[in-house]
Amino acid sequence: MILKVVKSINFPALLFLLGLGASFFANAQSSNITASLEVLDGAGNSYPQISSILINSGNSITLNPNSTTTVLLSFQITDNNGCSDIFSSGSLITTLYRSSVSPTGSVNFRNLYAVGSSSIINSCVGSSTTANATATFQFWYFADATDSSSSFNGDTWKAYIQAMDASASTTATTSATGVELNTLVAMQAATSTISYGTVSAGGNTGVVNEELEILNVGNSTHTIGISGTAMTSGENSIPTSSQHFASGTFTYGGGEQELSATPINLSGFSVKSAVRAMEWTSSTPYPNPIFSPCVFGYMNKLYVVSGVDIGWFQTTTSRYSAISPTGTPQEWINTTALPEGVRYQGCAQNEDRVYVAGGITLPGATESDTSTRNVYMAQIQGDGTLSSWTTTTPLPYSMNSFTLSVYKGKMYRVGGYDSDTDASTSSIEFANINTDGTLGSWTNTQATPYSGLTRHATVILGDRLYLIGGGNGGAGQNVYSALVNGDGSLGSFFLGGYLPWSIGWHRSVSYNGRIYSMGGWNGNSTSSFYYINPNSNGAVSQIASEWQGGYFTYNWNFLPNMPDILDTFGVAVVNGRLYVVGGNNDSANQDYVFYTNLDGRGTYWGIGNPPGTPAGLDFSSTITYTAAYSP
Image 1 (cartoon, rainbow, N blue to C red):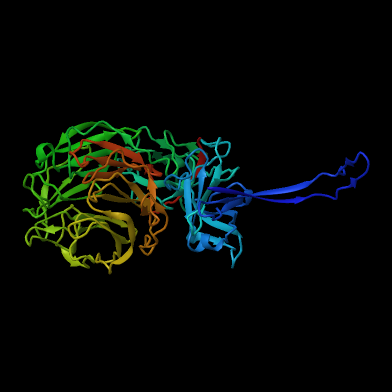
Image 2: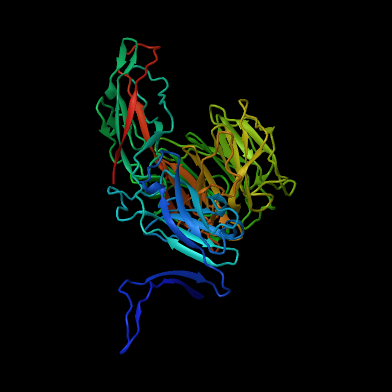
């Protein structure tokens, strides 16, 4: 590096007196010296200089609930060789970050955001050496608060800027001061109605609860106060206290709370902010390592059925565990075994009935080995045990590595490996679910856009079916969706966007309007956990978006990784918590059981209808939820 000092000197007039015993005098005025420092690289090229950094016009950042908020970063950049090459052939990297984290770490939308050159507007023209620049950031509603009431009240949000010109001369700086980001207390109900159905006079809803999901759309943990009015139908009414609620499922008349006209805090209930909620908790391990299990959730219990256990042998074992109010699974209890052990099977649940279909029955077999067509179903009993397994309409083919999804009384079988033809298939069929749980005949519908599809994940969200990752015998990055028509058939698939990378043997779930995806295999098992809010037309994102750690995010929001790398595990959502069981971590099958709170919580409702209530009337009331900040 060369430091070049440029000086301009102004000496005032000097007065000289010459004579005998000559003397020299200079007048008493001071000399003015102006110095500037120009930093040059080894080739004599000027380094860019960054100044006048301003975040959000110097104001605190106030977020928008369940959305993004525009935050502007403005600064000035100077390069004595000209500023144009910085924007045309050099690069600019800008980040906004919470001051106690590294400004050059991974983008996580919680405490670090990044914007690159393509999203920075500048005023550099021609041979100008100085330009004003503005970077536009979109902050998510769950970004960390730093105000006085927050957990990070000693931090502020600061800026980091790195500029490189065409000669690769690079300068980086951080802002001297930051701005606060305010706490946002906000909630949103997943639906606007609770429907109790028909309850006879003198009766109640018993063990049947209506669930109302509460979504945290702010950046702080909050509690819930609940109040309401009596149910009325003309001049008839049902007392407010007849409606009961709790933070978990219950049997009416137990220890749940009664609705009141004045707000009552829901006992033991808090809703963490979106990302802060998603911190994984490890629980008591499953009794043995398990690979490719079916995992179901119902009421306050978690079920694990079939899969591969010790020695890579398929197991027929079925177990369940009661979940404590804090979310921790308790002792695992054996229940009715499946008639045959399978892996790479299809798993589905429709209310209190669970289904296991297809799969490979031979120990140590691969996808191309013999599979079964059998579809087994069992009903979850009041005491938590499973009924006897019975067979229902078999699959159209002997299959494995497909998915099952349930939507509006229909079951969908998607893709998979057809061992009858020894090839993966692109086909999709659906069958009606009868009132007794049995399946009707399978009907072909719109096929997937692949020549064959395995190792994928499938979710139904809204009225659309999504194909997530997987491919013809390998990993894939595409996310397709198709409309589910009223008669159960599917419309045409369209490419709604991409995952951050190619993946297979992963798991995906839909919850509160979001798609969550986690783990999987892309040459190695992975631990990543991320989600996205699809548009109503099924689009996710085809825009590469932020570059993060060697890949583009495609607008997926990244959450804390699972505790270990895993593929081919089982997942279920129970009472607003996501549970992961078993899987393989590249070295061995695992006995893991861990869970995380999603960014919402369920509230559960039941009602008692007093004796003497007139029959044939429709009653309604208003229930009010109020969020209260809980630091």
